[in-house]
Structures are given as structure tokens and as C-alpha cells.
Image 1 (tube, one colour):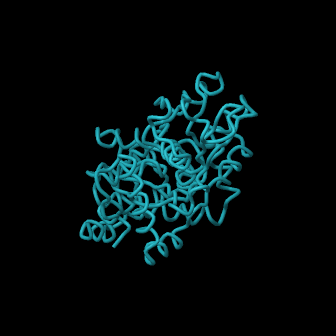
Image 2 (cartoon, helix red, strand yellow):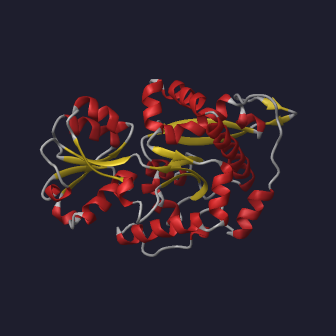
Image 3 (cartoon, helix red, strand yellow):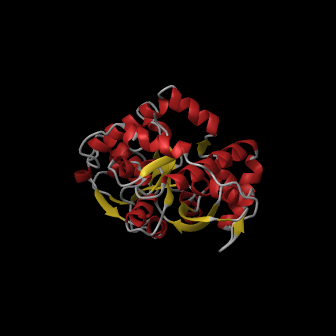
Length: 319
């Protein structure tokens, strides 16, 4: 893996000036296409929105083909089917690169957008026993629910877990078809509009002493190293722009996802955005390895992984 990362870091990047379009060329070089998945929230969209606005793709010789997904596991499934090159995942999907199905290219943020919610009248986690709970399997909604059940001394056998797509949870909860759910903002904001007196029973911050909740960008295992090097530079430059221009970034995300600025701003407040220098520091002092090792332990306990792998085997940013 060290050799792989060395190859990526050393790969030459194309310097071009034109914005990428289908068949465009700059400096006599064709732009290399990258199929990029994302989720239509601030975490999943902000860097792509910035990269497009600031023409960072073309600067590094790339032409993006962005496709929206509802969760991380679906993107990694698309990668392994040969339909996607890169994508965005929340913390709940980190078990997939840890299991060898993708590689983490870059961290993005530290999330606090996940919640366990319940219908009015349910006031504590212990009351979830015997209740019907909607959850998108293998996502951060799955993770926050599992952690919350453990905290209450409950197991999956004590509740009726109903696997659902995120959008289906929005509808099912509002219709009273499920008693509770593991879900995240901004979808939770939509649910609150329909069920304003719902109860939030747990959030990421409740488990901050146990583990961090990083979001990340991932690459398919077969994507060429030179493209990954270029993508990584695009993401790093976009991270620094986002850190320096938060208001402008909110507006770019609102435009890309056709959402209101106020809604995007509220969504952004649920996570701590990282810049390139901060990520580099966390890599150097061992913080990232500690985060991923802690998450690996959780995934082993949750039955997602048979054993906890060394983070450098699946995160290309580690030495």
C-alpha cells in the first residue's frame, strides 16, 4: 500500500486552463473523465460544488460526470460494478473500504448529523424495545442506531429493524408506519416539517468519547493512480476554498442541490469541515489512524467486519 500511495503522490498532474466539457481539450491534452458519486447534502456536495465553480477539475486535467446517490453503500456497489470511479461516504459506510471494497482517498469532515428519532410519546432509548425502527443498512443511520441500542442495553433482537431507503424513512415516519428511525440531516429536517413534535433520542455527539465520525471520499480499487492523484488535489484545493469561503460554499451547494440557502446553512452546521492542512496534521500525529482503528473495532462488534484491518491498507493518505 505504501508503494501504491507513493505512485499516486508522484503521478504527474495535467495543467490545463479550460473548464471541462464533453470532448474539451486544453493545452493539447484531452481531459480525463471521472465518474463521481455524491449525496445531495452539504457534506456530500460541497467540495464538488466548489470544484465546479472554481474550475478545479479542468485545472487538474479532469472532466467530472457527477451522479447523485442516496447513500454511500450504493456508490461502492456501483464502483464494484464498474459504473463509478469515485464517491462520497458517511462514517457508517467506512466498513466497506475497510473490508477491501474501495480505498479512501481523502477525509472530508467530522459528522454530527446522525440521529435516532422516535414518534411523540417515546421519551427514552429503553422504550424502543419491541418498536418498529426504520434504518438504511450499512449507513451512518445504521451506526447511530446500533450505538444507541447498545447504550440502552438493547440488541437488534429486542427491536424490529426494518431496512429502508433514506427517502422511504421520511415518508414512513411521517405516516406513522414506523415508531423510530436511524437517519441524518438534512432528511431529518424534512421529517420535522411533517412531524414537528418528534423526539431526538441520540446523536453522534453522545458517543464522542468512544469514536469519531469522519466522512470521506473513496475510489474504486481499479481506478488508475494518476487520476486518483489528480482527484485528490482537486479535493484538497476545494477543501481550502470551503474553509476560507463558507458563505459562498453554502450558496454553491444550494444552487447545485436546488435547496434554500437557509436549509443548506443549517445542514452545514451539523458537521465540522476539514481543510487540507488540518487533515495532514491529523495524519502526521496519528489521529486519523486512531479514528479508523476505533471505527474498525465498532464494525467488528457490529458484525460488519471479521477483524479490524490496519488503516493504511485502505486509506491512501496514511504512510
